[in-house]
Length: 142
Image 1 (cartoon, rainbow, N blue to C red):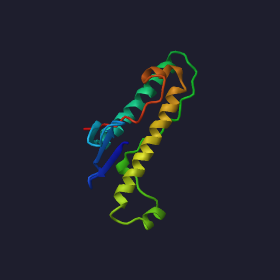
Image 2: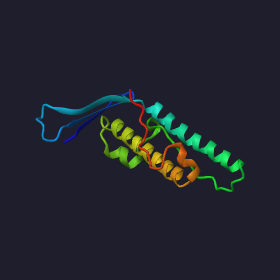
Image 3: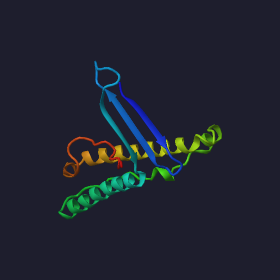
């Protein structure tokens, strides 16, 4: 059974750890252990780069004589720029607010990535940019 841990520093760094135990093995035996710090801005830049790359490919296809309607690419916002709504701020303790705000920002980033992947996969000429299946959010981890 996997166990996950997430820690968020006051500077917005996210540390993620995951441990998977081997089925049937003693609890002391571990199959996988991965730890790292998610680099939020590097992750955002990777997502923005993928959107920009798809947009350039769209321009190339359009210039080659295609009559395509430009997709409305999702807006990619850094999780550090997201804020809670007024109603959420009023009910959340001050020491929990930064974690929930960052979690909301990460969820929004994941939603933007999923929307981008849907748009990319719906256009055959963009499939070559990442393959025929939707990719997970490309987290930059150090």
